[in-house]
Image 1: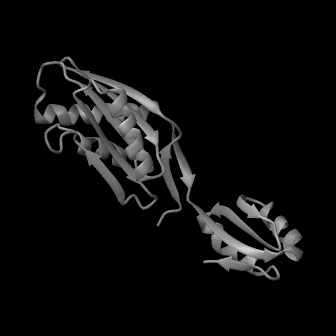
Image 2: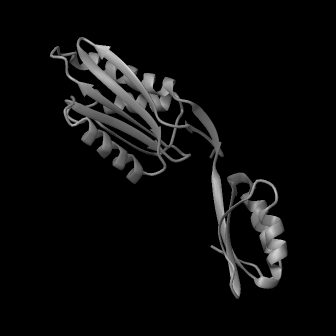
Length: 198
């Protein structure tokens, strides 16, 4: 398993024309399948007059969660070539949507594959690819008396406080790079009275 993955910084757009057909492509970062589906729905609503709104997404650092859709194009001529471009750039947590306005001239199977592949490539090329570090979180409780030690730990280095609640029993959720998590958990366990929630 790699602790690093590549994704897109933000939304980008491409345009490819072939025999009067227009292929408008959009590439964007997404974190979940629900977020990807919601974005697809937005594009389908916005481009409701288009002949086809085809798409593909890839999720997770393992790159095992993916889906593609031909949206009425012949099977395998749209979604798969879009997904192929995501794979060839080694991206994840990414959705690419390609909107096709039919120009009246049929492209044939190989023509469609080439057009969707090129449209997806253009959207990726217009974007900024980021290399990100996989993150992990740990939640734990601690007595109020250990507050100083916990706050020193939380404010040190590459640790981010995700959530904190201070009461009779205090709780906190911290986030850091996944490969640094075992060391962080060990340091939390060394503080008096802490209890890690697994």
